[in-house]
Length: 225
Image 1 (cartoon, rainbow, N blue to C red):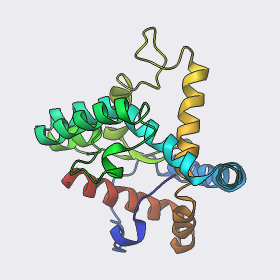
Image 2 (cartoon, one colour; image 1 turned 180 degrees about the horizontal axis):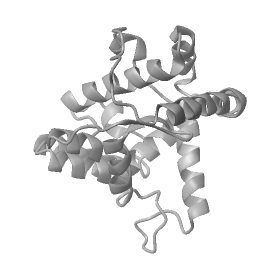
Image 3 (tube, helix red, strand yellow; image 1 turned 180 degrees about the vertical axis):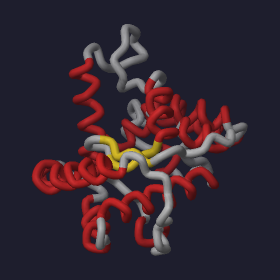
């Protein structure tokens, strides 16, 4: 569970009382499961990884996985008619893949080039097309989501290089390899955000509605960008 810039983006308005939440029982149970998994498995593993692996190495790994996410960002920017953003994504991918050792080095960032990544996914694309979020869903291990974004995740996954596939485009030859790569990516990225979730847990009186509201506000901000 990773939430960026939580304290700055989360306003503490009272959640809607009559909101349609047909999976509330399941969602509460899954929130408790995910929280327990974080405390007893994820946190100890990621904390050890963070202590053992130098920050520069973890940053390089993060850059590598960010570079691999190019197809998803590129296509969704196109689908939202953000052509300048797609062009910048293409420039970054070519630059970082060729001169950045397969993406391990963010060449543009190191050289202060005026281009940056524009994180867009198919859930955001559907939102710009007018598709509502639907009801809230808490996914095992992954945390808060909604009906629209859960569907969109599987659409994005078709162009995700971490997916199992029969061509050289895909890095994984089996579902086990794909799961291993995805887990490693999450672990490495989480090593930079451990303190963020700790703050959320301390601030929350009731964790489920707090995370639910936080997720909605975060997604609304991302969609508007």
